[in-house]
Each structure stands twice: as C-alpha cells, then as structure tokens.
Length: 604
Image 1 (cartoon, rainbow, N blue to C red):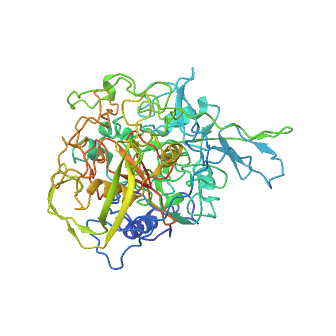
Image 2 (image 1 turned 45 degrees about the vertical axis):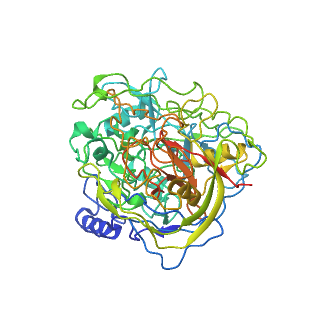
Image 3 (image 1 turned 180 degrees about the horizontal axis):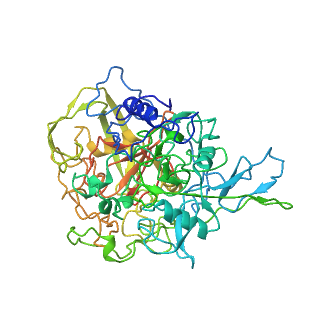
C-alpha cells in the first residue's frame, strides 16, 4: 500500500502539513530558498494509533460487504503465504533481505573511480555516508550501550546492520565521535543529497521514492514511551527525556536495517524515522523524524527540527557520519557485511535508574541458553527447532504438541467495553470487562491445528523472543508447519462465542501474564518477565491453547498482497492483551524483546 506524501492518515496529517506550511512562511530560507523544510517548532509529540482490528477471514472466505467497524476492528481479506524454500539455513537470517554493500558508480560492469570505507555508501561520487545510523564504542573497541548518554566518555562512531543505533547524543558529541572514527558529522546538504537525491532540487520525498509507503520506515509508532513509563504522565524535562529505559521498550528504536524497505538507491538505511539525525551547517539541525513522528516538522526527507542547540540530547537524537571518498585502485571487492551485534546492557550505575522508582522484582540473570537467540542476545544465531512431534494415535487429527480447533468463527462480533482500566492519561486499550459478544457477521467454518504453547526451542525454559516474522515462518517450516493466519489465531483465542479474552469477558492479569508492573530493573534494563508456556493453567482458551494473550507477542500472517507481519495477543505490558486486537506497525524484519510465535497446520 502506498500513499502520496500529503495524504491524511493517523492524527490528521493534513492539519500537520498545514501547520508546516505556516512555519515555512515564517522560517523560509533557513537552509535553501528553493526548498522549504517545513517547520521552526521543536520535537513534536505525535502519537500514532495502534491498529486494533479483527483478523481477516481465513483463506477461502472473503470479507462481507457493509460490515460494521467496531472499536477499530477492520476485516481484511487473507490469502495463503508464499511457500517456504526447503532446506534454508536457520543461521544468519536476520536482515536477510537487506541489500549487500554496493559500489555506486555507473553500470553493473563499470568499476567505481572512488570508493568508501566499509559500511559507507558513495553519494553522487562526491562523499561517503554511513549506511546505517551510528553506534558508539570505546577506543579499545568495546561497545557502548546505545541506551546511555555519552557524558565525559571519549567514544568513537561505528556503523553496521543489526546494531541498535545510539540515541541520547548531542550534536557536539556526535561530531567528536565521528572525528575519532576518522570521519565527520554530515552537513545538512550532504544528508539531504543522500535522502532526497539532491539538496537543491529534490528527486524524491522519501529515501525510497516520491510516495510514502506505509510501514516502510520505523515511524508513527503507537503511544508515547515516556507515558508508558510514568503511568500516563508526560515527562518533558531533560532528565526524564534521557531516561535509558525509554528506547528499550518495544515499538521504539529498531536495529539498523530492520526496516529493509526504508533504504535509498545507494543502500543507505533509516534516513527517515528510527532516530532524528544531527547534521551540521549554519545551525544545529535534526533531520528525518523518528519512531514516533515523521510529519510534524515536514514530511520524510523534508523533516527538520531546528530548535535545539548543539549540546541538546534526548532519547530521540541520533546521528550518522560522512567522509571523503578515496580513489579506487585496481579491482575493488565490495566490503562484507559486518556481523550482527547484540546491544550492550546499560552499565550498573545509579544513573541508569529513575530516582523515584521503587525497586522491582529483577530478573537480570540470563534465562536462555548461551550463544543462541535470546532475550539478552538478539543478534545471536537461531537455535535448532528440534524434532517434529508425531501423532499419539492413528486417529488423531493433530500432532501431540498441537490442539484441534474446529467450529464456526464469527467474522464480526460486537464487543462493547463496560469500563477501561488503563493508567491515567493513556488511551483506551485495556478493557476491564466486556458485555457479552453479539455476532453480527457471517459464521465461518474452520478446522486446523495450532500449537498448544508458544514456541519454546529444545533446551529453552521460556518462549523464544527477538525473532522476526520471517524467522518465525522459517522455524515453523522446519517443523512441517507454518505461521498461523490471523483468523486462525483469533478463533483459537476466542472460541465459538467470540470471547474478548481467552478466559472470558472480565480482564484478569493474574490468569495470563499481562498487566505486569516493574517493566524495568533498578538499573534501567528491561525486565524479562516471561513465564514458561505451561505455567499458567488458567490462561487457556476454549480449545485448550495456553498463553495466547500476554507473555510474548505472537507473529501471525495477513495476506492479500500487502502488509503480512501482524503481532497478536500482546505481552506482559498492560495493553491490548485480548483476542481481537492486533499490532500491524512492524515490518517483517522487526524483532523485539517481546516478539515470539506459535505455529499452525492443516488438520488431517
């Protein structure tokens, strides 16, 4: 799905654009008289709206015309996912669709006359720019936590796919880090050349083209992380805006290259969204928007925040470096992709914790096997999936590790909330109790198998997390299964009576693993609050499926040729932990500390 830059969406972008036009009249000529960059205002607190929608009918049943939209639940048609390639290796699958490093010059057979350092792209033959937003490391090569501000440390810039980029950094700190790496902070004109194709006569509005493509970049994520941390209260002072816990929440900053469609023709990622990027010119500027907003102060490559000084930093401020190219000598091989790195945890110091937060029940010790994909190590290799389970008897419809789901699914239930239990100031997402569901749509016969528990690999005690949609699909395929369609997941959760929660109509955070407090440890690290898949006997759907809401978010498939990667069920955070809610704001390469899955297959 594409939409032209300027089309209204979310919180009335048209109104935002009108404001940007007014700002341009006031501030025109700050950068280039031929191109207004759209705003004097500082960082906008634009909050997207998380999709809260019913699943599409399963393959073979189209949506009914004239269906009512209730609480944002929008039926969408589903088609089967593409078949998986047999025998594909499970290792190194993260960022598999990201482009390799590319020499940029002339045609495919033309050797470049100028080359860039590893991890940089050549722009118009004039300068090199980091292909991914920058991370930091010490001069000894030890990684610096991207969730911690720089302070007095002397750090240098580094870049690579899969690295969580550095937030919490000022322009002066970013410039010094680039210099220590033998580079320099990009000028505003260079940044615009890389993003829009030209700073004077833009060739495109977004790095990938002139029309905005929904979900291409990490922008317009739902909610405000500061409000999540502070129970609906918006904290705007400098201390709280640099809280290291903010960018560890799901739906915030993503590892470099995770949004593989957010890339320029030269292979430069995340120029729009993810983090604001410092540039240097006549005045300090922050370009490109960030994960909450890419429209308040201009659209796409035109986004600019010009209010902050060179020493300002908060959770949204990042950077990348530029450098002069070198003359090519002889045959040059494209540089190899750097290995994926897990972001280091914040250091154990009082500065990592909010001073007024009470001590929490902490789980700082790793709980997953070492050397494999885990909560602590999001860039490690995927584990073996184990052996495929057999059938207990010849008459069983499903393997021993799955349950049979059979019945008629209501395609459009009316679910009316009696009262909401969200924290003050938060949007209505957590309903305390629903009235009995009333089916207003067609009934869809369904029969299939679904995993009884969230996928927990051999030697793991807890469901695996930090997996992307594609990785989940691949692992299911290794077991002769597939990811569940949205409608399959939904029916397994709610049953024939279209229950809002798998256990009934009244929300119970003790029955399932959601509504948990103490999201962070006293040292500011995201608290791993997963539970084993078979540990909550009350968190069971009418079909006997466990932990289908809460615990970890579960990847499902939406078809129809558009956005396929949909998360269902929520995690241990208080949110939309129910059967008819969905999060559709993440791309197929997104993986977070809360993302897991379970598999489905046809019943025999």
